[in-house]
Length: 125
Image (tube, rainbow, N blue to C red; front, top):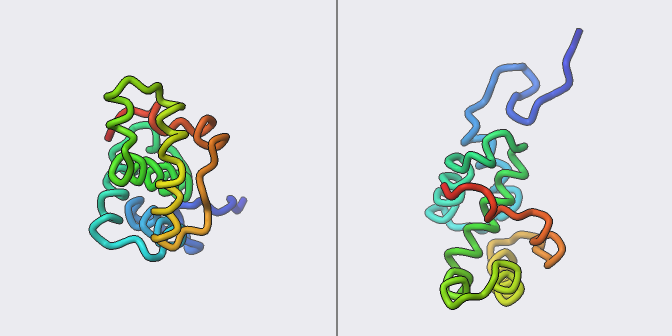
């Protein structure tokens, strides 16, 4: 019996390197993401225990948004100042979406998606 395709397997059935599969998903999500930043996102996606079983596109998206939040916004400073996570996310949402746009990402983060996704709830990579 023939099984359905898996995101980690090409049509010929041979397994691919998970890093390569997530890298392909990341390149589709953010085609203008610089290589050195793509490496950081990939490292985060692969090291995060909460993303190990995720579909590559999901792992790439969650790692990308977490990277943008922590590296390109005042999110961590807001947390250090005593803001709760939801408030800090609210204040950095526009900066995150600006970075995603700069990287050529068509998808944006919304406050509702931020509350549901909770990538920060996953252990740090």
